[in-house]
Image (cartoon, rainbow, N blue to C red; front, side):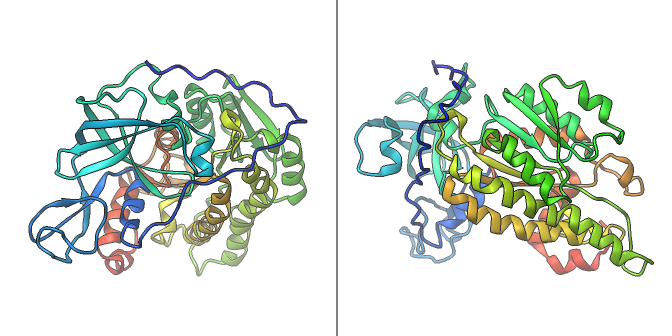
Length: 413
């Protein structure tokens, strides 16, 4: 049985902060097909189009028929653990601090034998479930878990190393005026978060979800105005060293068409609240999180951006939102590359239109705040980089992959 992790002790402020180390990250360009699948929470392997054989590790040529047609497709996740070993000594700096480490050979149901890291409760000769996980370096690794859920399963140290589980971690939600925040704060606390800070600008000014937010036990409202660089810097100086997960809920949804009077002003306001606000957060909180990637249970582990699916496919009625969130998506790629040096993962959450007043004119289906909150927690627990919430977001993702020009020409979503 997995031993439950204990709540982290208070950190000694005089102790040296351990520098974060990364696992080996060399991969072939072909192997990044596994990275894409791991980032989205899928188990995908190459399958030869000619002989239909699944392959692992990734190759440029099929070893059975020498075909070059080897696309990555979703594969069966079942398998049997053939053999296992516990590594106790290594020359690699990253793994040396995490010994012992279990690995084994899994005979996958789809054919190949896969060397995978093992959950502590995997037993030789017993069925396991295979998955692809992103390690601290952002590369895909195979991981095997028991088929059935077990007590304290998510407390396994190797599982926790490959995810950003909120349990016992402290979270900052940046914009408490966003209508999804009360549900998000509750979901994070129910997932075991030790504390949730919620930033609110102009605390004297009431807002629609204020009563619901204040009713969330364990959530602490703190002053944070993302349009004010000094406000962001002050909060970072106060709680920056305590934030393990940052959830950026910056939003400024205002319906506007490109030819509307004042559209340029609306766009500037939206960019200041979202794009520039994210940049201020990155400048103030990023360096501290980067330095705290090896603090054990207290480690900084994840940065989460809540984005609209309109960042990927413009919606004319919400043009300013589309532009600003598309720019935030580009900034997230930059930020992800910077945070990776500290082992901090960045997760983008693309949502369809929310079931809130600003999306009143958008047709259903819409995303309920609770649905979005559950998706964020699930993504953290699985260590994902990209998730799509709601039928509209998933539909756009599929249509964009199939024919981006068709999606563009179809206009409204």
